[in-house]
Length: 275
Image 1 (cartoon, rainbow, N blue to C red):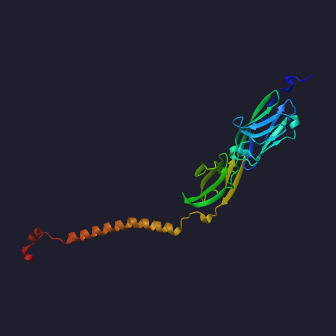
Image 2 (tube, rainbow, N blue to C red; image 1 turned 180 degrees about the vertical axis):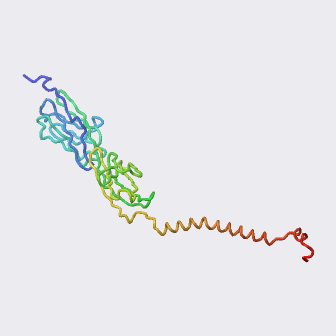
Image 3 (cartoon, rainbow, N blue to C red; image 1 turned 90 degrees about the vertical axis):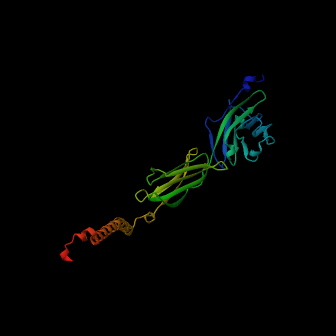
């Protein structure tokens, strides 16, 4: 007897978690039929936002590239090693940011069709942090860490030798024209604080990080010379003594002038015999 329609009923299953892939690398999106059956004579279509947005198409026993989105041409491969058991996977080469998002895995037989939704998360591991010393600030040395080429937005932090987090003086994260993120984080190191620190930038999606270290020699920290301290004290004393000396000189000069002045009344009261 010919098989009934029920025999050809199936469901399509994909992973229950997002697939993560690195920029420039490759991603494998798995998909399979349940119950297990051959998909050699089925249509297997991978598409994105709509049915006609074909990422990869398998039909009539072979790959069909005529309907493929231009952005995926030359970058996709349908893995058919286990297609007789209803298992196929889509491999995407040279992962780009535009590949980030949802995909539909669609199977169609002569009597039925089903699909499954998958998600691809693209991540970019940026450049190794570049650390530079940018002068003195608040009695210490301002050190800046920069890194670019991250996706999604990275997490940046300063750490001491024991791995403990250090407070940053400023932090700036910006998205460039290519949609990748760059980060800039600064710290002010003082002579009393940790002089050897590391800048760590982490991609939370990949759970990977890049780290660079820097050690500041003591001679680079701003110091106050003993001669400068002495000069400061002398100048402060002069600032007090000079006005005081000027005031005393003025009082002395005024008193001397009063002693030399004799009024007419004093002259008329003199004894005539003294003339």
